[in-house]
Length: 179
Image (cartoon, rainbow, N blue to C red; front, side):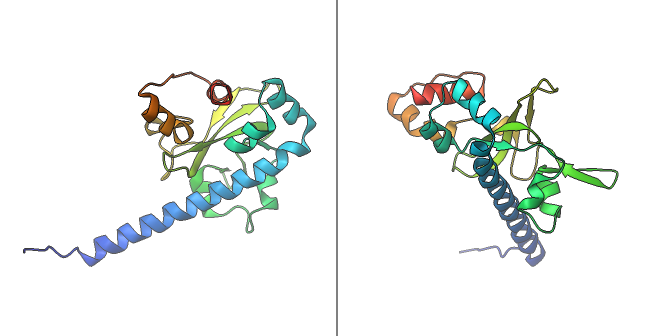
């Protein structure tokens, strides 16, 4: 058989890209864990999710969290802060040499790939600031047009029922799952 050998340079580039994606996935997952830990520490955030009718079990199942106020709460988890991976994932913004967390004082809804990896966030502000909702930016692991929120949790039920419901908001998806 005629087997083509891959160009060593192309193989190295593909391996480097895969390593970059794994690093971004690790960073986003670590941020998710941090946000989950912060939710019970904020009475206002906990009151919001409970007020939306979400049970503690469904909150834990979806990994809902809270991004604390302040310019760099993620520095509690990531050293050095900021890292290139934090910036590349969109978790930290770089504005003319000043770096700060993208998400502050927001309920955090982890967005998962169809395989279940946390690849980004949808975030709802708790106050009256704008924008009301803020999503992770496009990155090497998160492509908004290719992800459907909640699909990881719903895919088996959809296949079994051969049917699904599409709703607009994060809490709408979660509330339907809870019911």
